[in-house]
Image (cartoon, rainbow, N blue to C red; front, top):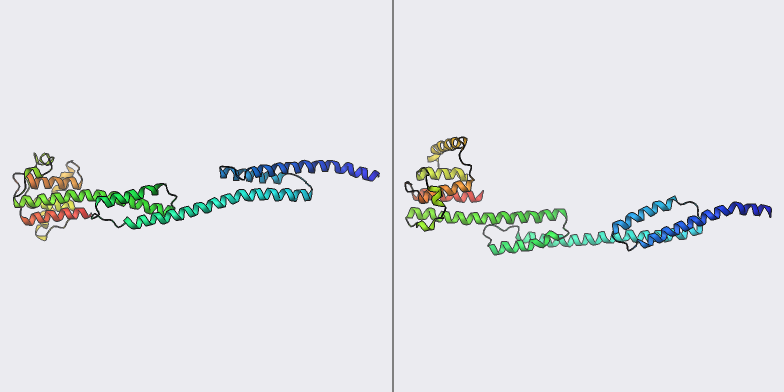
Length: 281
């Protein structure tokens, strides 16, 4: 009996320690269970991981009780991380659907050219707008961005084409004598005022240089001379203008300068070709 009493005295603090540890683990189980539906999910997962570390630091418990507590804790943690897996799966499915929808839009409009009318281009832009908020994968988002850029450039090219088409009409009508002053843009007279007169031949060669268009062999020598002149003009600090602005000034001279000569049908044709070449660049 004395031995039993001694044994009980030794076991009592151990039992108290076990009960204290079991209570601590029970509290962890309850905290984990409270996280099962906690939002945001990332916060719930972070706290669950912290509870797992806390669990490992707890000391001895009764084996049977420990198994029951561990099973309850493990079940709660599994439910938390299963939510993450389900969320990832849902996100993946949403991305796959969004990618398919976006690729259908891209395939529908990526081959649009300058022949497309404004209504079709606007339709494409309208269909692109909702894609900005969709959960697209990075490659597909890049394809959508490329199409958006293509449509922007297409709009710019269509505007340029409309301008150049109008200029081509004015070029031909000046040669035929059918050009009326009110047909030309209102700002062209300002481009002509004070400008040095050019021959039709030199004007056309300048336009070919600006547009990157080949010049006939018969005018290659003159082209080289004009290129040297243009280089000197650039070194002299002349106005820096874009190719379109320089072409517009040349067309204005062709149409309005009173001293313009050598405006043959051949030169008009070459001038039109230069404009078409510029449109293709």
